[in-house]
Amino acid sequence: ITIFYLTFNNECNLACKYCYVEGSYDENKKSISMGRKTFEDTLQFIENYILKLKEKNKLPCKFSFIYYGSEPLLNPDYVKESIKKISEVCKNVDVEKNINIITNATRITDDLIDCFKKYNVELAISLDGSKEINDSMRIFKGNKRGTFDKIKESIDLLKKNKIPFGISC
Image (tube, rainbow, N blue to C red; front, side, top):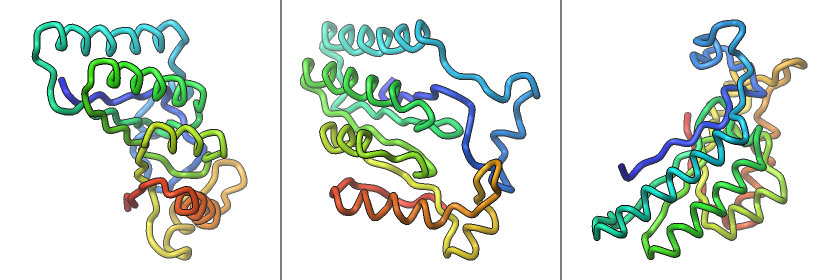
């Protein structure tokens, strides 16, 4: 195993018209977040796995950690804590790591920016094209407003802070 997908919840703050994720959950499972014990057990599993490979002299040249879900940044504390832990473990065994967050970029804060900079996190931002196209499909839950302006604001913040990102469309 060299690639880990981390999904802390199945929730999203958007109501994209084409979303297959939200429509695939039973009504009583639409809002599930990982419990604290499961989160801690997950990080412990990752650490134990990497240490065991080190012990056997079988470390790969790199591990990839992909934060995924509906919207991973709905749980910023787990994101920050896990990035820190994963980074420490990889540094301690001298193995390269790549951390990538797939996000709609509507929940990026200065606190997260600091974490992304410190631990060299890359982002894949969901954007469907021009403002007109994006806002016709990617809307906020509740008020149904388009998301383009908020995403653009986050992109500008990432650029200003020299945080690498790509666009997923």
